Length: 482
Image 1 (cartoon, rainbow, N blue to C red):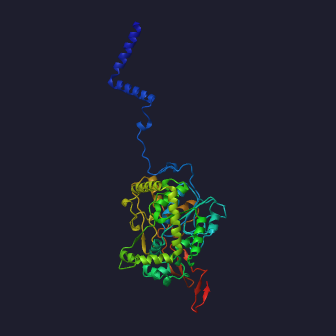
Image 2: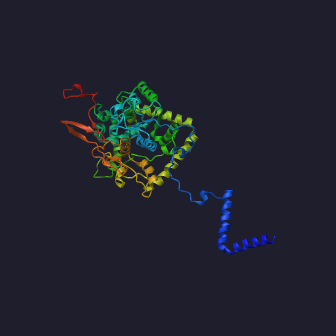
Image 3: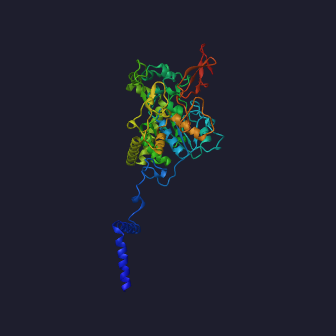
């Protein structure tokens, strides 16, 4: 008994001799040990949480309402119609495919032989029907379903986009005036609208930009005289070929429908407007000045009606698919659509603040410091682009860069990734990422001489000749085919 009391006293005296610092340390260890046993502490409390990227790491970490048990479509064909916000849609396809290492059906140049009807052999790496699995196709073509089916898998989701033909004509006039003979001859779009046949010659190459351009891009005869029966047959053919037709004027609603049709995460369809144009500043009263461009594109109500009559086949398509679009919205649910559109726009604003300088507004190409992301310029109008915030971390910068990379440079990048052994085309520069980038894409050249004959080149330098299927009237007044 005496021994036990002496032992307790010695233990107490030993602890006492440790001093206040050691006692405090022993108390802390005891508390920490007890806390671990009771679950009071964990790693998130003991260590600062790592900042989360503004971009999700996977499709499962996306934003928006749950997509349910569906699986994302990875076979998609987009008919890229002209002047319909289609460059923005193509950027979404490029991003989705690149992030998931999907295979693209890419053209040998920048278009699939446009304005000729699509042929499967225009696809780089094509070896025959079903020989290679392609996931995504979306560059400019004149649609030809039997040939597309040779390239794309049987379960491919087909979609496209349409626009009011009057608004489309205004954009086409501003963009293609230098290459479409019908537009070049007219003093302005209103002048053209007053009497289109005065300026329009169906035999001249590139005049397809001046009449029923949607109908033409869908692979149909854009010079056919309008009849209700013909318009309905064309509409039925398109409906048979495509799963979904979007409407440019309701772009955000279109993206919501597309997202759910493809079972893609919200971030896959959030975008910044690409290929937007701005009038050139005044320069001695040239056509491209802001004042003159505004006058050249000005239309009266009567002229707008005349343009709809001139593009009657396109007007029929727009009305028909606009009705179908809103029927789809009704099935989706108006309230649900409004909520998802609000979510999409909020997400776009967040990414714009994270990614872009100048408050997210597009800027002139000359103001973009990184020359490899300057958009291609088309003669008479300025095409705007974006600048990234300079202080982005590398992963965020790469994600933001995908959203603003212009179409031509993005195609070059994907081409280099899929065909790494291929040599860059003559005149191409190599970007920091290793992709060949054409620093100054070829502008349209009119009247190049080849063997004494006058030829034209499209915006990407593709040599253009006369339409071999149409007669050309010779000096003696006789029609001959060339």
